[in-house]
Image 1: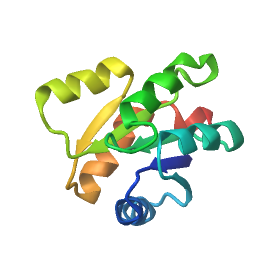
Image 2: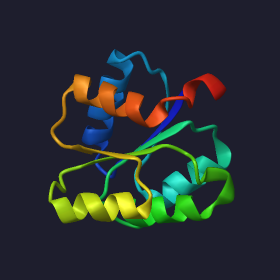
Image 3: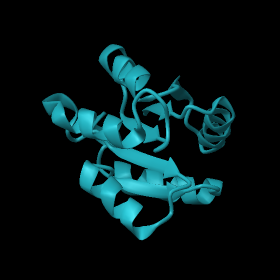
Length: 126
């Protein structure tokens, strides 16, 4: 499975990528904001996106909305990993098209569970 990690913090990208590698995921590309992520989606195979919310250039929510307008990407699983823990934020993310939500800080087990939840049935067909 090919994953795209989107976060403006290089430290947070590294934490997420290291967690993903511990979980057995090695096909990982990264982007530092939503605009760069859109470019990566156009060039690279991506089976799952893990994105932050608060980023410059294009926020995670704006990025998700942009992805969901593309017919070829409307079913792409998106997991949002963010510090925004308020109920209204979670609702806004889901309404924008996020498939699941992880609040920072997270454990590897939480990440594993959320990835399994959003990719159920996707991995076999990818």
